[in-house]
Image (cartoon, rainbow, N blue to C red; front, side, top):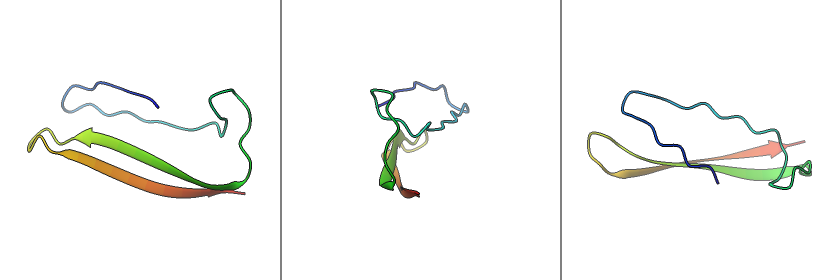
Length: 55
C-alpha cells in the first residue's frame, strides 16, 4: 500500500515494477490495482479499480 497526500490541483503518477513487497518478480496472472481518493469538491470518497493481466 502506498499513501500520498496531495494538495488540490496536484497529481501523482505511479508505475509498478511487477515485483512484490519482497522485491521478487511476480508470476504471470491477473492483478487488481485500486486507487482511493476524496473528491475535493464534494468531499466524497472515490474508488477506481482496474484489473491487469501480466503474461
